[in-house]
Length: 605
Image (cartoon, rainbow, N blue to C red; front, side, top):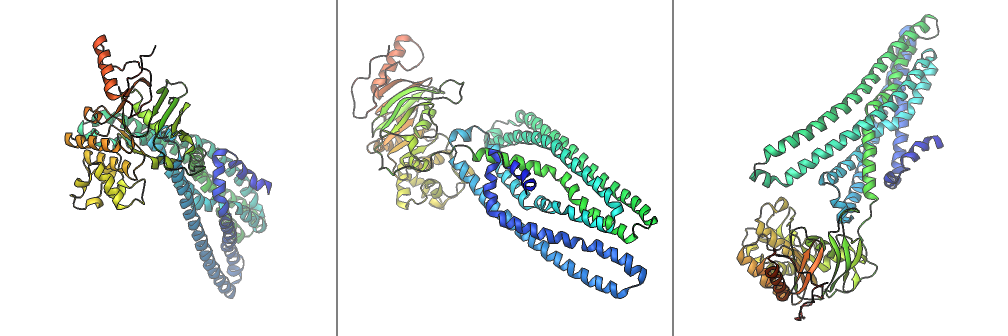
């Protein structure tokens, strides 16, 4: 028993593969059923060679027509049973495939949804697409031809035993060839594994470029970038094809060696058998039956050499899935259900960097934003504005310091809680194929129609939506491609406002809006600031009029913060005095409070 379970235990011994054991445990009875059916299928497979043996040794030489009739009737029954058993095995394997597809696919989806944003950003989109193909590889290996092959392999001993019983002089040829096949299969696994891994890396690189091209198809067409992208595509495609040919050549070499070894086995067995027949040690029927059994014996081994790539890909797929499954999730449950927060936001010496050896993108930020009011975050590109928003949303975890919501560290809240308390309208307005209503209610599928209409009205989208032929039932297309950029942005803003979250965060919300829509948005922000804490990244002078406070960021630090008028006057004075380009003055950070109209803090030392 230990010998049988040894390789299996070794396979599941790594953390990357332990997850699969949990999925397979409920399927153990079904696999046992497949093994039992395979036993009877392989026992029935012996019937044909035995039939041939009896026909040649008894019927032909003794003209036994009655015996032949009985043998034929028996074989018809055997073939019928064999058909029923194989159909039963196929249905069981289909059931295994369905359960694996549903269970592993659902687990992967839930895992990707639960991973922190940094984990998702650390790998290209093609990697995550590959994971779903890995699910298919796991399913096909455990429920397809490869699984049947594994079920049939142990019964090769049965055929070898029968050969010893009916044609022992040629059985030793099969023993020697059997051992050679095992060595060939083992070596095939080593060589093909390395080649398949290299091929997979080239395919990922090529698919990554394809994903980028599809995502940027409008830009590519508008700027006629085909000539620039063609060499990159050709290089990556050539590398993938070249590595595929290398892997294919190595695989074909072993497969062809297996076919050659099979042919040699027939020649060797016939030669040894002919000598045995002349020495009265074997009958002609025994030799023919032994040759037929050798095919049943060596067939699975020959398939194993050819199918080794599938097993290698299976192992790689299991490892990739296991690596993702073992990653740390976002917090999914809160220890206690808290009341709706008022909206006070606090940064306590918060620092964030993308890598251990990279400079801080947000550097020791200390900030306190009181509930209510509209606060703008300004700064040059790369100053850390968007990263600061992602820290506020809990999408990034600071390497030091804390981010607080109403005095509570946001790390203790689940992703769903934060999404319900903090509405977010990103700079890139991503919509999903479906109706307008579906997209507005994306994070709150149970939202009432009145809530959706209120949110779209605040976003200045309602009047435009009801004029569409299908209104809120209008399809937006892939990524919102059937709508204008301004309409997509309004829908994204409406999505952030559904449920009236106490905190609303917007990143360049007027980027795709015309002047009239921007002016209307300014009025909306002013109104929202009376009952919500609104944080927005903007450089729009129009929207800045709705902001009671402003935060100026520079190189990850807050250079100035306070009432908008005071901060802007200080910046203008600093620019006039120094003659330098517009740059935030190094002022000490104070509490950002819409009710405060005092002077901003003295300049920092």
